Amino acid sequence: MVEKKQEDTQQEEIKEPNSENIENEEDNNDSQENTDTEETNEDENTEEDSLEKEIETLKEEKIRLLAEMENLRKRFEREKVETIKFGSINLARDILSPGDNLERALDAIPEDENHPESIKNLIDGLKMVLKEYKSTLEKHGVKKIESLNQKFDHNFHQAMMEVENNDVEEGTVVQEVQSGYTMHDRLLRAAMVGVSKKPVAKTEEPEEEKEEDNPENESKEKS
Image (cartoon, rainbow, N blue to C red; front, top):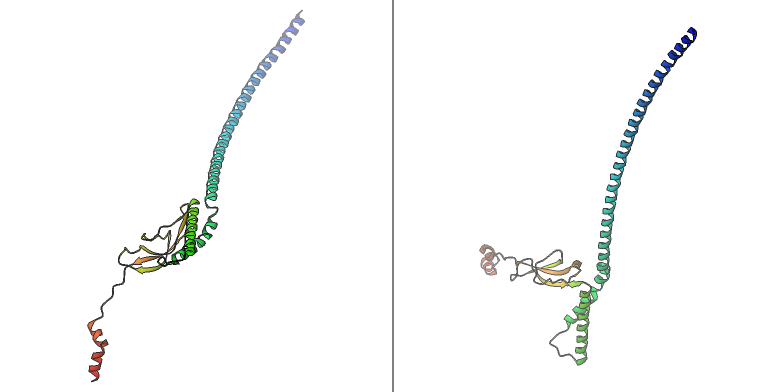
């Protein structure tokens, strides 16, 4: 009986340390789990921050892209309008010369002379052609620059000569050599003009020089 009791006490002693070890292991496991949970939470927070930054970056890129697309659309519309307006600018510039020649021909015809009926009809026909020509130009946005008696403007005028004139202010257009035109407010051809300037004041020669140049004085000296 004594031996049995000793065996039981030994078994109990053996069991007790095993239960302590188990508790320690459980505590270690719990602490490890807590540590793993904290690390997982930190990783999740870091991942969320990076995703939020990526979302902000994508939003900014989208806004920039939309702005660029809007600018391209406006530029395309502007170029489209300009192409429609000024697509025929070279043709309009070239077609001005026949109109100039027609005007010169009509201006060269004397108005006072009595012409035969056939010539009168021809002149009237040319005037009608010139009128229709000008109306067609205006229909397509081509307008004549009014130059005479206007202040010289280098944006629309090309000075070909200076004309002395005391009746108007200096720098006024007093003569038009060739008409100028604009197309939709853009210069098509500058007007060739003559610009007024003040006459140069004549300086009187000194009396001594006049006496020297007088031939009577020269003849007296010779005699």
